Structures are given as C-alpha cells and as structure tokens.
Length: 104
Image (cartoon, rainbow, N blue to C red; front, top):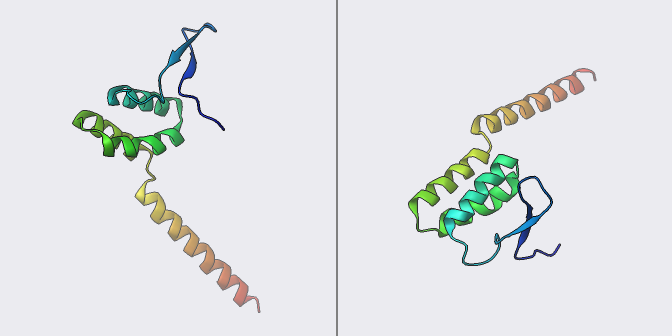
C-alpha cells in the first residue's frame, strides 16, 4: 500500500477535509508525540508500538522522550501475564502427559 505524505482528516463532524502533514519531514517532535497520544486514545496500538520507540531514541527533548517512553510502557505486555501463561502451558502439558500415559 502506498503512503502519501499527507493525510486527509474529517474536520469538526462535517466532510470537509483538512490536510495534516503527518509524514512530512520537518514536523516537530511535539506534534508527532501528540499524534501518537491521539492514536493511543483511538486504540491504534500498532502505530504507537511502531513509532514511539524510534521517536524516543531520536528526540533531544526530554519531555517528548518521557512521553514516548510512557506510551511504549503502556502497550508492553505485563510480565506477570507472561509468567502465568508459561505456568499454564506447563501445567497443560503435564496433565496431558499424565492422562495420556496413565490410560495405557
């Protein structure tokens, strides 16, 4: 899919469009982080995970870096959930093996 340097956005509930320079070089970091926060609020987590890390690494503004790092941390999986998933998988395998070999 081809990406254009401008995005057409619906303005104030009507169908008139305004042009937002979202992919143009020269857009300041404050605008980029504001767009990422809006994307997070809309639920566009793929865009946030794709763009927040590089923005945090490339910016010189500490406020923008902290906000981008915070967005990245919000979408990261919970470490407890990872551990519980591994425990559940091990228990499933153990129970399957037990009942499979017990019946023979």
